[in-house]
Image (cartoon, rainbow, N blue to C red):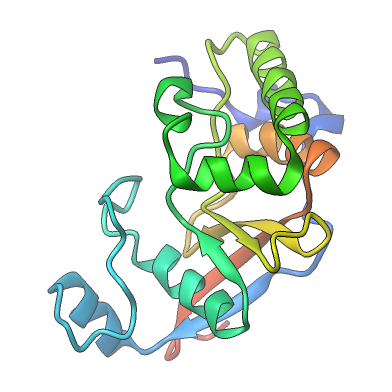
Length: 181
């Protein structure tokens, strides 16, 4: 597997969020409950344990945060990666409904071409959440949820493309309520 390093990106390709980072806190007892799949946990379990942290706890904390603010949230979808699986995913279909198939396919095509120019076989780095209200392209955004990890090189490439074709991408930092921010 070829690793893409941030220092290999052209300066104009370094992505910076257009908005302030969203800080979301959780009670550490809830993490213990989540990890033990305890029904008393206020966060729903992620439907498939994937990703770097396998438990997806921070994504589910962020999902509840946005749902509590009146948004709908898709947390299980592929936008640009794994083209075979993404076509059957509920979240991907919701994104296509909100933006239109042509716009989404154009975003994917540019992402694939850009990643190919960096020597990668296909695009990667999908944001963790798609957040929307009323099915409107004017009231939606993607969210990349981070706990202690930085934005990855793939994401520095992909996020500006998403913002060009679809909508803003925000960063949400999820923190233990006892942690200094």
